[in-house]
Length: 247
Image 1 (tube, one colour):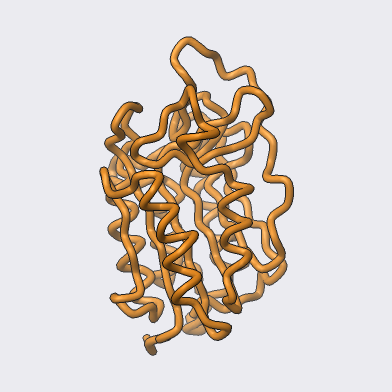
Image 2: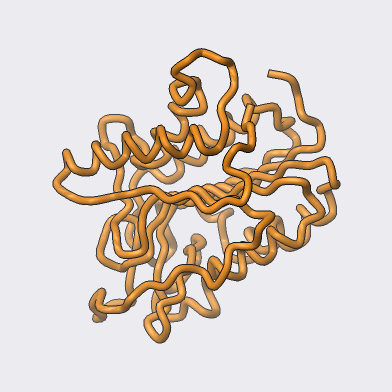
């Protein structure tokens, strides 16, 4: 595929946390997502992969809040990909993604709220920004956590507003669990994103896939696979440009 020299990707995957349970296969997701972005034309030198202890709060902040703003131009498409645990703020239901050194009892100071993340991405001088989030925020299991001794009784709220520049493809609804697909050694959502972008979301063989086509493919297969595991998981898409051509 033709290289897109102005495009960038920040990829974050954490399965072995400093003080939280593991998020199964999240680092495998990140590794293959980085390869996927290169296949979409992002130059290898423009892809940053943060996994394990390198996916700390300060490192994620550094690349989202400082590195990307220094690199991105009005011709850029920016991808942000996250695979790992999420958690709700028990006080108000705000959803947070959990870096390697996050503490579920102190999410406001050790984790990154989706509101803050999407706000930072929206300030980039890029033409398009796409966030893919393989996580969940209910605290009920899967790729979500709660502080020790608490129970998942909080109502998780959606981000206050996803900025119009940012398109978000997410693994599950607010009250659902984002699970894995052990036979594939990937998160369920990530596995079908990877397959969809490898061509399976283009059933007519046009050679092109839009964001909406990818979403419909991922949603269909994740819903069916999750039901085969006796649970519900429904990916979501929030975008003002669903017909954006990914390739």
